[in-house]
Image (cartoon, rainbow, N blue to C red; front, side, top):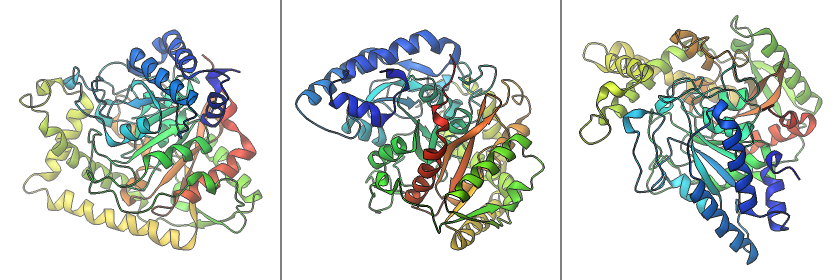
Length: 470
């Protein structure tokens, strides 16, 4: 059995049947990281001793007949997540040596479910970016073609899963940061309903947009992990008291009679790559063959979404990063990277006297209109289908000096964060050797239906089985 191409489902079964031990599994991943990560840049910190210690505990529990949802399963943790006594940098050198005294709620939930923390993954610093090139340390590279970007900001976590360094990659999605790297790395990424997974202990980017999620190889694995991480937290007032269903139970159900909407504003865009359009439409055709009814819908305020997003989010960033003043937190402010400085200045300007009403207040009103667009559309259809990105993964350095072009990478995904609804990226094909993902968007707390649709598609296509070549 190849330990490095396993799914969580397969690994759980094999661990329980003693085909291999958790220590053997973790050692295989550590060896692979040591062999290949120098050319990919997925990890900032590998906690080898901690992971092996946790693996030994998992083996002892398995020997006693204990079962947990993620017992013995390796997890790669985005460096925004606070991890007790393990270096946590947010991809930013301003807090290079920080070791938190506590875990994020989600980290505790992983550990309580038996998961093994492999280490902390690289990212665009503070979550600011769509490519994985804005880390203050080094860029992350796409494992399908190392001359191309893996998507960001949860770049290292996506690469860790795609390259066979881990079975789960944790992420945050403020505007694209789970779905885009999932799409670019041929894995499954879930951006939950806002507040569905606690934000406590995860370093903030933009607090009213930040959404905590994860990436896996398959839809089943993703649904299983979501059963562990979702749910209310008394330390996060934005988490609702909504029961967490068994998401894995929605898999395998028929799609007959379900309605899917295709936003005309997305597919008529001049910016969408021909290959992306063709692959996405082929995927939609496959869903139609499985019984879904597809119709065109409208999200009329789409053209204002990016402007709205890049007023509101930098405004929240300027507030959140103001605490890193070199007095209580972090080194001196000149340690901030170029993108962080750009967003701080944009946000501070939008919030300043004389400009607040013209920029921030107006953008807040547009946010409401965009949210209403999705609500109205999802009254007519069960899910919305769209590309994740208007292009395949682009080359390293191609957009790094053109912030506007980089921001437009998120044009099909940022509106979902503005609306606060869930969306999932599932592999749907390739442009040459470069992966492309299909985005499935649903109603608030409608993740079960997203998994149902994605699972039916995945079962027919199995794109996730086309591995990265290292």
